[in-house]
Image: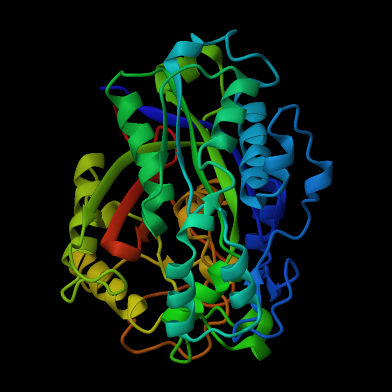
Length: 427
């Protein structure tokens, strides 16, 4: 089996566009959560989100016939920018067919819900009339007028055309676990020799009236608008829901032998991947954390890594009443009474839904590169039910060779990745 490494990485996030901005935000324990700017949210119970602050859609170069459609879909632009950054780092400006057979370079990418054109429903939501019965009744009255504006794979197709990636392509939409699953599937393709390289990652934005309105109806979002940057509070006793975020991350994965042959810098090694399904309620974790435990154990077994060898866990850590203690119990079930440090970078960027796992994998790259544990900010009164070392409020220097990234999503989707410093483990 092939060893798999990351040789290129790009990101667009509420901390800024580009890996330097993202790393600086983590280093400074800065929050990207602020008042919503992309639409008028004054009539909504939730008026805060983690929006990308510095990407002007009109200035993103789009040499595609689909440019007008792409400019209406911010998450597509987030991915295009992240993918360009990842490819530039991995290839150094060379065309893909210089070091690779383009037909052996694929794509495995995650995204979320698509933009649907539903004029009456959208105006109903935007008006602030957010009662459940009214929304559902309105939605059922107008299915004939609802149509998809922008296909889920349009941005992926455009990146493939621009870069000349001619291998197989998959677009994953498994909710909050999608980003980690996309990376995990890319890892499997490379490890098993099906491909030589894969561009992988995730992109999403639900910071729009339908997204904010829908999650508000579910009671999943923090309504602590007055706290602004302090509203996303994973593991804190005062947490009251997650804060939506948006963005994208992209990674160029290839076999270690390929990277060595062409002298590419290895940013990290993908060591293992595990996934499971709770088969329980759509919006609640399994009562006994069986799915989360199974996914973590599967990832560690796949990597050949003992729990004691893990130096850091990037938690799913949403800041909801149910998720955080459930994840803490699952971690202790796998790692025992002395688990490694755990932090939730959702405290800084919010929950990016379909892009969450990918952007959090980027936070793990930060931890490995800088030998620093990202912080869980806004953690001032830790919930006793979340008995973990959650790296409160400030990043912490540490020796980090192997890290685990957790993604536990709506619908009971679970996906975990094990990443390490390249050459951290013997062949």
